[in-house]
Image 1 (cartoon, rainbow, N blue to C red):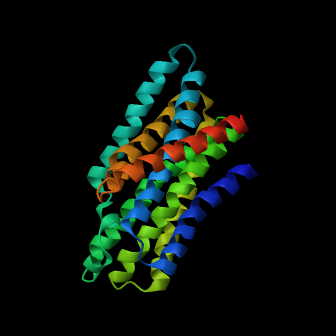
Image 2: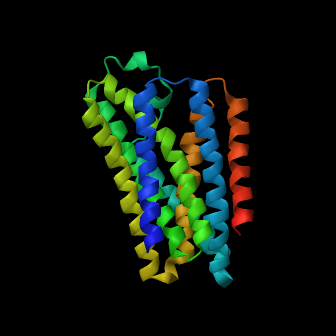
Length: 250
């Protein structure tokens, strides 16, 4: 149980680390943001495939492949429905700070709320990884999610400060988005621990949500500003780093 608590704290703290970086620099170039987010996307892609989807097929037994495919699509559809209810305003990541001088407070808070809601399934993915009993794979998944949370924490800060929100309240909001992920981690862990029969589907579901985030949000965002080539190689680098880690830990 201790590794789960430690991991949940680390995953949530990654958002706070990103927020602190955002406070320090306030502005960062599109190229830097695209490279960092792409690297995180590669890490998450490897974590989803190696740590969630392939184990789902293995644990599913005779019908493992069908269960995995179903879980992937159900996870993606669920996140798509969340997007329709609370759009993830990821376009704010790429806007220049000057455009936020007269930012509408409600729009900024919707942006923060959307990030918090999207953090829940990511936390569940980390928790489900531990529920499988494979600690090395679980750490890999959690590491990928945590790495993605750092740039996400960074981009929260600028629009909130520009909207006139006080620094202390801005930091608290960033902290709360990380807390949501901690809660999700425990939900995923206990759900699988209580009903081990759902493990294959839960793994695939978590993998599907991660694939959806990568394809629907992270990759498009990093290809908007003319940095496609660098972003592509950053994604491949992130994927290979996690591949090497998986082989070494395995």
